[in-house]
Figure (tube, helix red, strand yellow):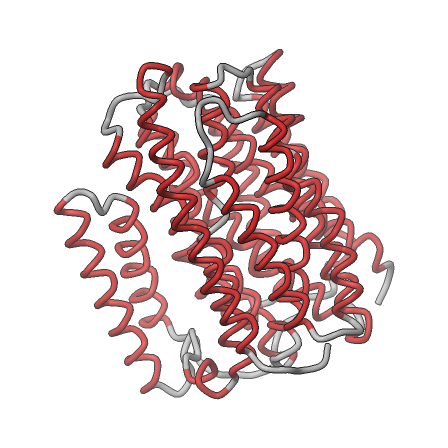
Length: 454
């Protein structure tokens, strides 16, 4: 294939974009609260609306990418993110802003499901872990750069400047992908697309995720139950048709694939909201500026970025089960430390906890991704990538849902500020305590996938 470096660069900088926007939005929450008049619960939806769309659409889009071409879906996704980023610059209504973020989440899901699949398709199997490591590292570079670059932009400009970065990123990616107009990386099968299953999945996954995020309310509890029952119905429907959009039978027949995905779901559910919670803690209870908050929050993803590539190279040689499980145990220790946060906790304590958490995540993510992608045939790369993305995003939604649940339960609809700082400490201790035990559960599934080679 011609110039793999340009292709890798396009995928890598695309992988930087979504985590950059999410993490930078965490630092921008106080400005968004002031400009768009959002309370604490509403602020959580700045990222959750984005994640909800991504979780709901990943599976159908992954299957579509396998059929019509992963490059096509990748490019369409970049155009959607480009247009919605431009729209966000001119919006000052909170409702419209969240709607645009939802649409942006659909575009980003197209990038999620195709990026990993394109790398797995275009690069040789014997060095796949290394190149997947570059892609995972790119995600963490986005997370690392967001607090610092985002903090600087917010210090001198406004939250709108974050979307200018997004626009520039999309334009670069679209320009680079022009060189690969003759490649689509798609399956040759003529099987029919499961449109009915896709609609069922999108509707009930949306209800489940939205309901859980607001489960403290009666109506949301009902939506959660309806969504859960609907997903069960979706699984039963998929078992009966010849060409399902989501082949649930594969989970039963492939233990490695099933348990690696489950470990990813739990890992993200127990770690994603850490940045959101600590951002509010540092700015509202410790009175740090956005730039200062960003400098602290960058520690975790910076450590992730360093070790994700290293662990990717190791996964080309050693059992990914050992690497992933070790990573989850290290993460559990880091999250467990944060459960002991108080109003007087020294800043050095957070530095150490975030380094440990970043180290654990760096050792988990790339080997686990490698394990998932190596457990399927090439024609299933798009679906496998989409499934892994769905696990990741569903975990992120669950993580934010738990954080929002405890904020709503303990603090209510009032804004987080110094007057209720002690209540917010209670939120942190509950949430991080639950996260700790979740990671231990995830470690079991990571190990139980069974021994296998790279």
